[in-house]
Amino acid sequence: MDTLYLTIFQSISVVDSITACDSVTWHGSTFYASTNTPSFSGLSTTGCDSIVSLNLVVFYSSHADTVVTACDSVTWNGTNFSFSTDTTFTTLNAVGCDSSVALHLVVHLSHHADSTAMACDRAVWNDSVFYSDTVLLLSGTTAEGCDSSLRLHFEVTPAPVADFTIFPETLSDRQLTLTATDASLRAQWIQWTIDGHYYGTESSVTYTAPWESDSVTVCLTAFHRHCTDTARRTVQVVHEDLLVPNIFMPASGQQGCDRLRIHGHGISQFEITLFNRQGAVVYHSTDISQCWDGTRNGIPCPQGAYVYLIVYRSATRPDRDQVRKGSVILVR
Image (cartoon, rainbow, N blue to C red; front, side, top):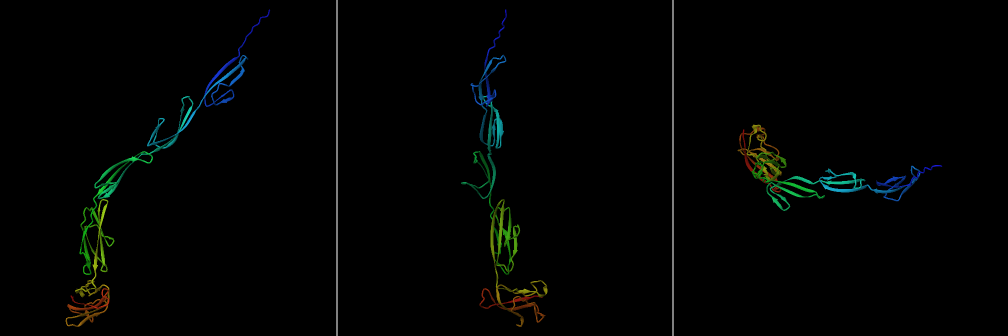
């Protein structure tokens, strides 16, 4: 009698549950979404049918862009930023997949400044007037909305008052030297200019005008810290038509004193005759630039007074003769 030994194997049917991020490849196929439809048929190790069903859950990575605008600094995901930058932060999202956030950060700066404004006598700010040193604290926002503050310091200095006296007030051919003396108020120091030329910083100055000058302009600038003031005066030089010395010394050897020189202003015609005490002519000329050396026919004349007669025409009276009479002393 034969004996039968029978072994029966069962077919297999299982479910393969998979959780994945973004996609998964299963038995040669790639899936990007959750599904429970796919199945795979084959033989088990015992040679029986084997059916595997896929239960797939797909979660997704997250990616985002964010723009942040801040003043001065900002803390983002634990990092402090004080400058504009672009950066990316990577972590896991709630379902365990990759999560990345691209940060576009713009940092604007607050504005804080100190400024000093210097003024003379008074400072004007909007509708306010300040007569002494003043500090204003001004606050607001910048164009980007950040804090803005200004500490404004007004330095108000009493302005000097420039002034001076001048003597004489009019110059002439006989007096061409003037003296100017400072009379300014609140001046720390001064500066003179005469006819546009620097003339020192002393409290008093003396100036001799050239004989041909018609006027002399004296300016005094007074300084007090950053403030200045200027006073100006013009002194007229009054020219005589003729200037005749009343004494000269031929033997002195001093230039300007050793000859009789006649000075004229605007003289168009000229004639001079000199007489001694006896009425004799000792000198005659029609040239104003010529000088008498105190001789007659090459012989020195004695010391004493000599009478002159001058007939001339000038720019002020070009159509008539003018006569000047007088005496000059010859000294030996």
